[in-house]
Amino acid sequence: MPVYVFVPALVVALLAGFGAAYLILRRRAGDGASVIEAKAQQTLSEAETQAKEKLLEAKEEAVKTRTAAEQEAREYRAQSQQIEKRLLQKEENLDRKNEDLARREREFADKEKGLDELRAQLEEIKRQQQLELERVAKMSRQEAHGLLMEQVEQELRNEVARKVRESELAARDESERRAREIVTESIQRIAADQTAEVSVSVLPLPTDELKGRIIGKEGRNIRALQQATGIDLIVDDTPEAVIISGFDPVRREVARVALNKLIVDGRIHPARIEEIVAKSRQEVLQRVKEEGEAAVLEVGLQGLHPEVVRHLGILRFRTSYGQQVLNHSKEVAYLAAMMAAEIGADVRIAKLSGLLHDIGKAIDHEVEGSHAVIGADLLQRNGVPAPVVHAVRAHHYDEEPRTQEALLLIAADAISAARPGARRESLEAYVKRLEKLEEIANSFQGVQQSYAIQAGREVRILVKPEQIDDTAAQLMARDIAKRIESELSFPGQIRVTVVRETRAVEYAK
Image (cartoon, rainbow, N blue to C red; front, side, top):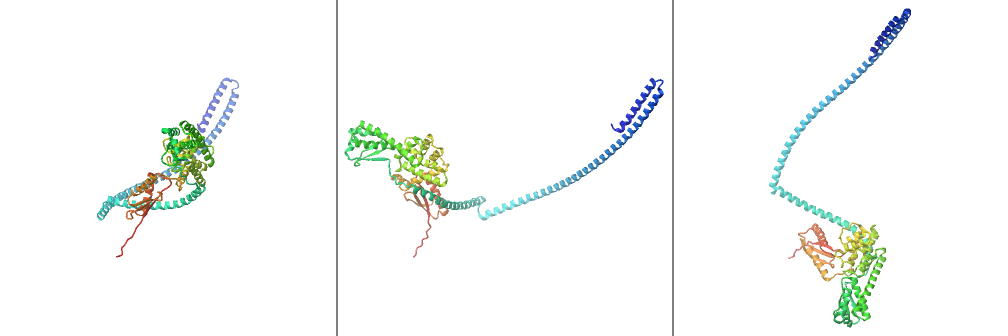
């Protein structure tokens, strides 16, 4: 409640109270009424004075409050007017912007309509020009498109062939330079003699009379020897010699040792044959173990499982294309290790992979499958590190090579096998390979003649110059090389040379 209302009410209440008190006192007091009345009058006078003072104070406070309220109201109205003015200005601006947008939309619509008309005119002009071009060129749009695509394709082929040739030449120069340094140094450091072992053994005899004793009465001795060793003995017209033939190299060596002992001993009969064969088998198995341990010690890879060492020793009596497999394995180990050291690969993994890469050949006549896969399975069962197992399995691409060591093993194996004099193969297989090389080359269109030269290490192709240009000759050489890789199996590498010769001939009359 406002002060100016509360104070008068308070005064009225006080006056009423004093009046009531006065009447009560007057009623109760008989004799002292005048005194009490005087006091009441005095009290009433004082109350009136206080009431008037309070009333004045309340009026002053009410005036101040009203003045402040009016001032605040004026400020609020001024702020409201300013806000309203700004809102009116913004509304006017929005109205102007809306008008501008509407105007621009109308302009854009008009322009789009004009563009559609212009586009339609251009399409019609284009169609007319296309019809005129077809009439002048005397070919349809599809025919022109096909001709253009053919020209572009030919240009791209030429460009690609040129780029490929440039890249190949640059990469070949650098890679050949670096590879020549590494390979030459490696080969020179481990140069080995030519190997010429075969899958049959010839045992010389002092006299031809021993042939009868080896055969025995009704062939009993030779049958007993063949049954005990599992090897075929060929006693023919060859003077003073017996041929020992068989796939298992260890059995063949057992038969050779046993037969040699029987000849020296002179006692040749079934019981003695069985006894000598048993002793010879123990000797050969001991020699197998020693050969394996010697090979591991020679290359410095001790700590292999005894079963791995035993199979490694078997390779001493195994040959491949006339090349002794154990010597080949040691040679590959040295090559792979040297090349690994040059390029920063793991030398031990490379050397171990090279030594064990052909270990599957020790049992490939007993287990079906590629010797690379057989060898990898054998090594995996005997705790050989996984990178070595992968390299062995991948060295004939039975598995895609994924490591540097696997790729180095492939290169080292090819180098060892391709070394002149390292291997030899049968005349029949050699002739078939030469014929197949020429057959592959002659199957390509534009080939005039082909020749397999340098013992099958190179195939030279003469092409018809009017059909094959220089770019196509480069592509043909690549295609022939890829086909040879996919259809032939060969040691080392085969060079493909495409010769395009243009001759100008005139006659003087």
